[in-house]
Image (cartoon, rainbow, N blue to C red; front, side):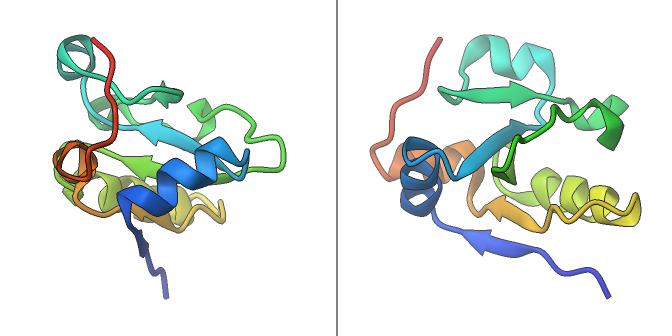
Length: 105
């Protein structure tokens, strides 16, 4: 049975800094245009294809979105496709900003 592990914004930020995580933002291009996670790749959920996720090159994939709902959906879809991507950023970019972490325009 597929499961999705919640990660805190602080855990994800530290994991990115340490080279442990690849952050995959599944928000739509218009959302990302307004505000984006630094150091993320964008694979929109509306056209989600797990094959479009770049090779994480030894890193663990962590999905992110606005509030944490679409990132769970993306993780489950990736797992359905046979990929071991079972982590997401709980709270999304809302939680990320609430934790005082930077975004880029």
